Length: 176
Image (cartoon, rainbow, N blue to C red; front, side, top):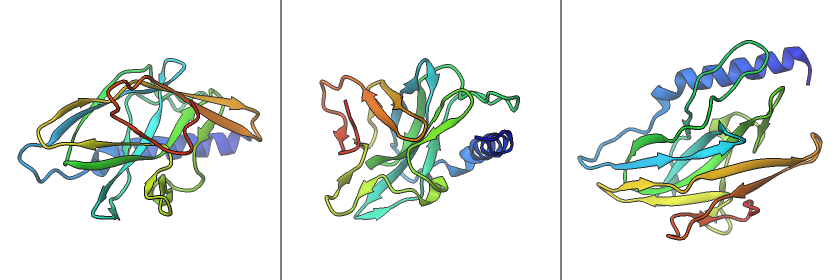
């Protein structure tokens, strides 16, 4: 990837992060669920994008990002740290994700994050992961390590996590 492309991608990620508070889901219930997200890659945070499925309708994607960005050369998602959000009750699914690979980023699906689709419409199931948030619930999602393997031209991802309580519904793109 050229230096110019790398800088444009870094700028796009920074702008998404700055816009993230405005992209947070609107809370209308008096007793929202408090959900803790824990996604990492080699000790760094992973930028994840989630949607809520409500009566078959998909909400706008919202990013879950922790950490700070540096505009110099290697932009980082910051060291891993759990992130908590208040959410409306409902089914949420991982729409897409981005992993910092040092000099480049791995993006699970091409295109702008608002146009990606992590839901398998034909199967009525998530492509990656989903969970259900219940009103007034405090939910800590299992810690998930997303490992990018393979070559730059043919990368693949592997999700490593333990979920004995069965919090996640696992989709067909999750290789464990």
